[in-house]
Image (cartoon, rainbow, N blue to C red):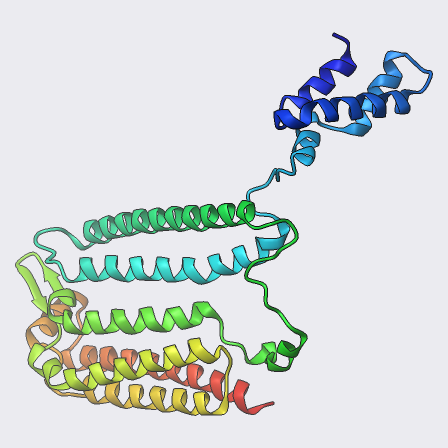
Length: 320
């Protein structure tokens, strides 16, 4: 069998049997036309080189794509991944962290606890990423091959939609919205479990730094504020760009957050005297200095973060 026949056999063996004879005859004629009267091996090689890989040529004859997701669906495929993957990762991260924060630490050291939590949370995130990518890819793989040629599913774009496009300078990133939600949930979990998680550990034992009775007094305000924050995050998710009403609501939320934080942090009985005494012994400082620096460090950090967040919304919404 000469090289021409080998090439033709490589092509026809990969297409439906009903097409093989016609394709074989077509290829024979094409190769003969390309080589002309030159029967040398070099001329045949050049003709076969121009025809290309028999695998690819067979796929063209069989109208069978050689890619998982084609150009017609690739944009929708990427957009779906951008939406679903962050949500899946965020949910599994929140659930993993909540699970660890609500479980007792027992005799495990903080370093061991954090390393174990990090490794298992990382494994959960890796698993959900793989699962999400697999199922989205499989879904689009099936759609790619089920939709008739020439049709583009999920595409309903019209020029009129350009009128609704907002300036990119006012857009709100999906990542920042998810960060707001995650931070709010984790802050509530930390607040509820503060007596267990925020402790001073010594050789003689561990002591809570915060007074649970003081925290309990402000618990309804914290829950209401968290609900307010999540509602604003959902509002951001819906509009996806800064508007004046959204910026004003966001500013109000940050102001209330500062006020509630100040009310809690400035409570005279918030910090445990016993825990502060242990810290004072270790760093050779008086109780008043430790208490003052600790309270104002946390409070100033919250104020700076809130001011930056509300300023971003107001600037982007009102400078247009």
